[in-house]
Image (cartoon, rainbow over all chains, first blue to last red; front, side, top):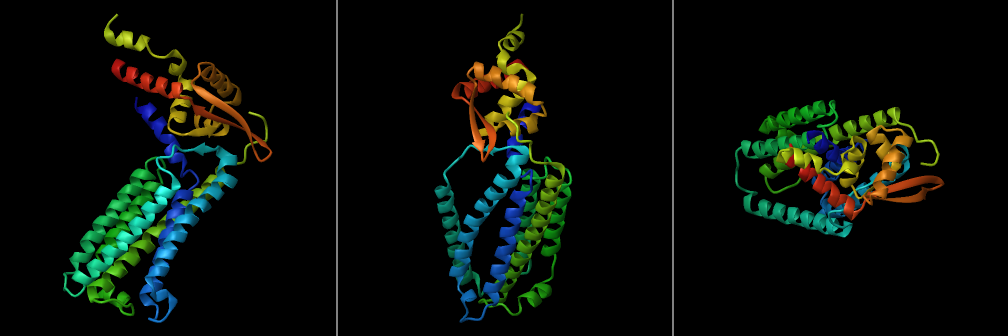
Length: 230
Length: 98
């Protein structure tokens, strides 16, 4: 029965056999970090200052990542190890609506948080504890989703967990130094933004490297099938 | 013959063969897949895989579509409704028997 269950899970893991899933997530996280950094530091009259650009960027990412992954799969993965069409739980436009809805909620929630708590002085652990918990949850999700079948990816999950703890242990002064030139309404929010940026950078970089290594190994160990009838 | 042994005897013979069980299990988790994917995952040679696929097609458990990916021939395979039901029933019976 266990062997049967593991067989049933194999198509799901096949989706990241070439590391494209991780490359997509890593690229998205790094680009969000970059755009977030530009937004927080852009002069008030610059284009980068406006949050609408961030929303536009999110929409572009939402379109670029699935289509980019699809193109790599079509040109590289399918000719080498075969084509798989997964069962669709819901159509693309539903996912798009969910994405836009989640982005809007995040923004509304962020603004509400900023207005209601911005001026309240909070202890440093008020940032680091939820950030560490969120980061460890992400590392656990990665371990469950990607590292179960590929042994070396357990080390990647370990790096994510250790990095999360390291960021969470940064002192208030260290975060303050990094947040110095950004705009915002309170010191607390400056530091929240820096923690968010550091997490995006860590996860984005690690996933991009891990995905890149998987992709290189995939290319090394596979070759396009011979053009013969099946 | 006790109940568990009887349950084992009732298992679908078409699906119960290890090679075909692998194919049906893999196809049950996807919408459709091609021959190359099944060959890669099951590590069977073309002849053996073709033979198993023919038996599953005869039983009406899979649907085979011959098409082209560019100029390269491609064989797409999917479980039929009957195939999906048969696999679910097989899993249920196997669970009861074990």
